[in-house]
Image (spheres, rainbow, N blue to C red):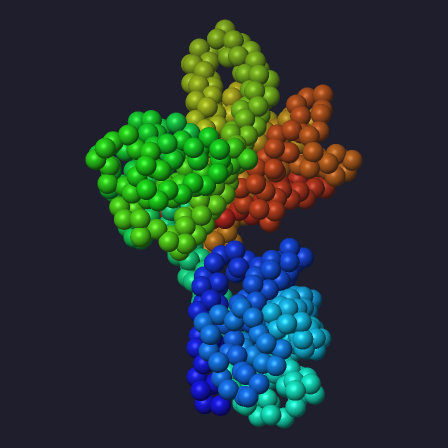
Length: 584
């Protein structure tokens, strides 16, 4: 019995070695992580080969109960028996692939045992299939939400499988054979099945931990690099990103390209991989052209035309935005052994996140351009009406008061200059916006002397940032629409007050006639066409407020017969603070 135990331990070592080699194959790991029809077919094929090998490497026991140890069992007299690790393989197959995989592997193992045993002992077919089915069913029940049952349960199921096998052997061969093989086979197959599943579980657990570490590394790197992609992929952003990646990884060189040129290359080979020059490696050209990741393990596969290039292996991932390749992220090694699955997954994660951030940056640029276009369209809409009225006023003043005409012309110049300047910015300071409003009102007062008064009630600093044209639009709306039929006593109050450390409120109040309820329900929510002017200005402003600061800053309107209040709450920011944050 002791000799049989030692020999079976040798066979068990072979199975464990094969299990270790198998679990190191990505193809096999993909099969066992998700149970599909395709994966079950492949697992059946793999474990069927294992079970045949278990039969071939078994320990022969003669009719006189002596242990025979051929290297490979190619045939077995009908009077002899065999001790092997077949049940171990069937148990592992059932726990890995489920009851149907276990049954099919048991069927293959039982048939093979019967065939090379001289077509005797047909009970091995029945016992092997039954064990495969029962272990698979019980394993699925006790594993819960886990990929495999716990180690104690695996040991129990493996022990249970061997007991079934021993019961069949006792029935057809009697006590003599059972006495010799019971302890070695039950002990080693139970331990072997537990070790086999533990190898799978440990490797997959380590792989998940490694992926978690890789995810952490990717997130840390992206946190440092993403700010540079907000303005797109250019020489400056590429240089910063490559330097950061090179600093925090073991890559020998890091590069970024657009579709044609090298944008940055930091590390080994930077003497001939030069920013601003065309991409020279065949590997990078292929990745950009096909839009697919490329790996190279030799200098020849990289395809660098420079004979002295020290780069011997590489990983190239295309950067894709809106299903189009816009460039590539490349990492290089001077020793091929440095390039492992860890590095490959890290670069793949970085490339995917960089592609997403570049897409966001492009979308932000488009949004910014759209906002600027809306502002300029608003200027075109407002300015002609105001411009011709101002010119007519100045022309009339030239006949009676040249000095006032000169002042009006200067104010008109200030108005249009500030319009052009503020139109380039999403936010301007209170001082700049107030200058714009004052130039507008000075011209209106020349046209309508004593008709309007404007008061400022300001509780925030002059460098506080406001949406460009914000006050101008409110004031112009009041001048045009609030005081119809009234030639004097028309008052506009601009009130800016700090609500807390982070927010301020803007109120523009008039004592006009109020807003028609039929107009009020649409005002600021959609463009409103009128005979004089348009509600487009308030609508665009409201959209900009929500786009810049969120829905909490959308326009609020309170109105009655005694006047109207236009109100919005926005973040409290000043130019100096914003510039400091931007520089950091």
